[in-house]
Image (cartoon, rainbow, N blue to C red):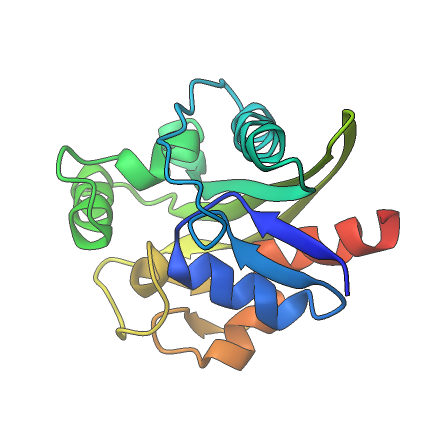
Length: 188
């Protein structure tokens, strides 16, 4: 089985990607001994994913998979976007979605989408990329405690409910990450 190193220490992402990418042995970069902080200084989801995948692949001389993802809110001009994980000063899931709710107080247009850009980087410079999206809107208050990140405040158009109350299987079936991975699998 081919090994791919996930350029992330996010346990939620690792679990989700392992569940969906069963044709490969997916291991975290930390499990392979890579513990460096990677500065995500790109201006797009693609640039940040490429920075992470290339850095880990170059360090370990193995194929690396990275994603950059976030929630993009129409009425906020696409924010928080690439800054989703560090939107609030504290940078916790709860503080991030609470700031988002605060910034949307009194706003009627709550259309939003989760975007995921996946980059597969192979030693030698081969790059394969795919993007996935899932649409919905930002709720007025959190619903449920399932998932991670902004899930409790995101109403999924596909599921007709908050991702915070959706089961892991329901979320994985429609997630932006799954859609990106499915496209990436076809390209691989």
